[in-house]
Image: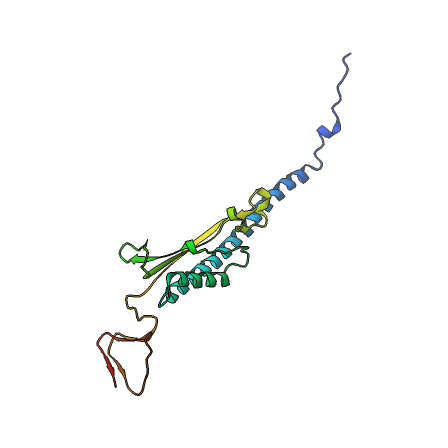
Length: 196
């Protein structure tokens, strides 16, 4: 008579197998939820970063009127800091990321150039290499503690140097009365200007 081998009961018992399956499903769901939360947070932070770049570019192109390039860059950095994403731990804009130049309307490209303040390009960023990346919430579980974000904004000054300081018309400008205009004030009419 041959001895019978008895297999332990736990090899045939299936109680609790759904619990193990649920643990795997829970891990997958947490990763998907984490990706969704961190993606929406990244989109919001990038929008805030774009706003910061837009405000800095607008400040630089408006401020350069009558001021030096360095003063315009300083004003741009000030506006970028005021409008930086609240999650940023460092400056999102440095002076080397502000370029003055010109804008080609036909090719829609920015061409950097010294001495030309007809257009400005601002590159704002939150970079994980400088420990200024956007911190993640649940993506840390898979090894992504920070994400790098960057954006650009280009501002172009209008063809008329008076565009930001004065009276401008496509028709004739007629000014009557005892008006005084300072040296920085511009009066322009495509069909002429009449004073008096």
